[in-house]
Amino acid sequence: MFYHQATFLTSCAKLDQLPSDTGYEVAFAGRSNAGKSSALNRITRQKSLAKTSKTPGRTQLINLFTLDDQRRLVDLPGYGYAKVPLVVKQRWQKTLADYLLQRQCLRGLIVLMDIRHPLQPLDTNMISWANTHGLPTHILLTKMDKLKRGPAMNALQKVQQYVNHDFDQVSTQLFSAVTGQGLEQVYAVLDTWMMMIKKNPGDIHQG
Ligand SMILES: Nc1nc2c(ncn2[C@@H]2O[C@H](COP(=O)(O)OP(=O)(O)OP(=O)(O)O)[C@@H](O)[C@H]2O)c(=O)[nH]1
Ligand SMILES: [Mg+2]
Image (cartoon, rainbow, N blue to C red; front, top):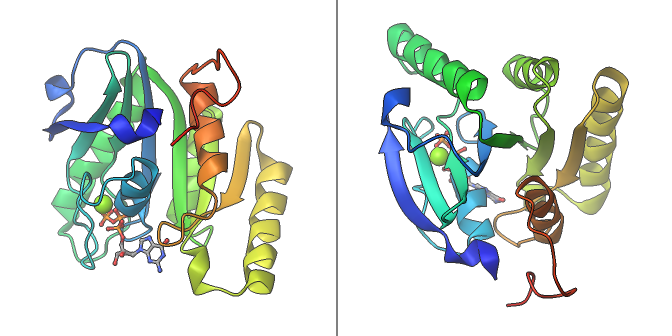
């Protein structure tokens, strides 16, 4: 399985520390505690590739993971963590914005939102900003295991209505890092953005 071969590449506090801007990157963004690192671990089927934590604000650096010599996944610092000093928050925001603006190899943005608290102001800012800049965006409503099927479907519908009304190039799905629900859909999106053309059906998604 292609995504299971991920390895940690590097952590960057500043953009000039990033690896060369070539190939394909897909970045994971969302509020602190939304489940970015957990999703990355599930997608790569590695327990602790990306550090997860009960303490919001754990991921403070841009963490990059190598898939192959052309392809990388990126864990971005979470936004909206109240307990961080303002100067630190502003510094992260600037780094985040600069990364999203400048990175030529960035092919798409995965925006993660806790299904129980979707579409908070910073989320809609991020989605809207990405849309304005023509960056393809895919939303994961995370922690779907915390809701029963009915409420989960309602939340999905609500978010879909919102994005379909306001934006192009934005798709939405349910996801759980705990149960793995929604994984196949995530792989399909990543495959498209990273130009993982399937030579034979089934080649890439085995295992
Ligand atoms: N039940 C459930 N809990 C989850 C899921 N995904 C993440 N969590 C929990 O939510 C908390 C935050 O998860 P992280 O993956 O560290 O969140 P993050 O978005 O990387 O947070 P920052 O690094 O602070 O920005 C942890 O306690 C995870 O165990 C999920 O799908 N289901
Ligand atoms: Mg994290």
